[in-house]
Length: 486
Length: 31
View 1 (cartoon, rainbow over the protein chains, first blue to last red):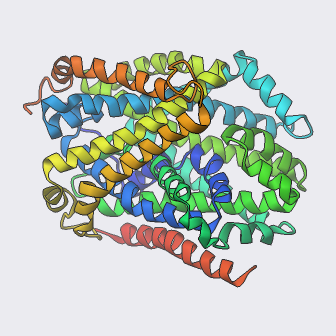
View 2 (view 1 turned 90 degrees about the horizontal axis):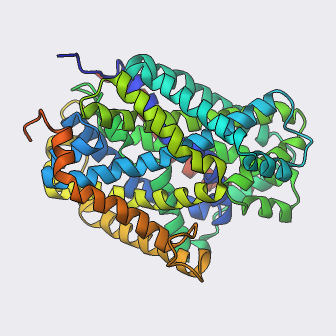
View 3 (view 1 turned 90 degrees about the vertical axis):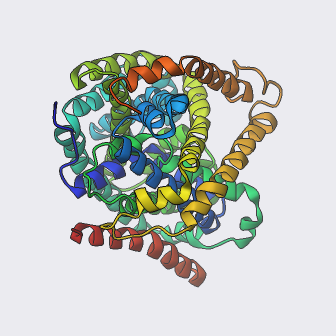
């Protein structure tokens, strides 16, 4: 029997986990959300939910991966019982759905990095260029192919020579790049306006339920908790590896990166733009802010070309390190079905490229997939809570988390969070996002499954996927657990 | 910078960066 793959060092698993967690969302979403939701007032719920959603789910994922040594599908089947394999299928499919368009984002950032590095990004009409680039069809497609091929090349080399080695380069480099960008931003004239905006607490905002729900959403999406990615990395943990402390490091490291990026972006925005323009920039969407406003900002800065290159390289590294984990999740599922890594990775390459094509050539499809599977992740997180409760939250904590050699022991709060809080958070978030769809995003056609941000499109796409997985639950279970007596 | 902003900055960065670095150091020294 072939030797089981595992991370060679603790640093290896920590850097891989940080690579999974730190992604495009830390760079293009977090600073805007902080600015839109009252600065420090937003940081409070964001930090609270780090401990009441993200870190507990990271611990759950690590533990289930380490215990079952199987990807998402097999892990749910083995851990919860064969009747529940469909839950693991949904978790895996949801993250795969994100991988398809995430490769496109990684490609965009690679393209902008290359343009900035070759001195061709600044001094142009940024909005027109963005529309021309995304509308060209072939360019986003080409860069999507380059991005997924890079990720595939890394994962092809396995856990140690591929994932671990790549993250040992990507993550320290990413931190170095964003720290350089933050130092530069803090040295700009009037950077203090941005710092005040970022850290002066507007307590009244805490009375607004939207700030709490945005904080929870950001925490849930940004750390990658409940996506099945850490479960997949958990498969490769050594027997004596720490689960609890690694989960805290991953959660806090992800938040540290988010704060460094905010220190780089918000002072720059307020230093360079007049107040009204700064607010307009920060209220733009993810892509508008990153690919239209950011080049505009760097254009007005001394040595802007250098810092634009640094920024887009950091974005590319962050996106690539997350894409790697998504590719590994998908590859691992096929390996559980009996394929060798070499065969599985070729299949993932083909599927990943082909199913990313629609998002690469149409921003409308890209946005729809981001909406459907982004919200789907909340359901994935809830499924992990169901798994723990079926096992017994107390039993889970005592037998799988509080192992002798870990430097942190989890208290009873973990049981309370998994039993009551995560289900309540899940229902609140789901209702809130559906309410947004009905009232704000698609008020006249929220039921229509062909509208980008409709409730209908979410329910139909989830419904189709869940129905297929539930109908074929027995066959899928046999496929992934065929040689395992569970 | 406003004093309250400074206090809050130290509080947030202390928890997040402090916690992260502390755990990294503790973990790398572990068995």
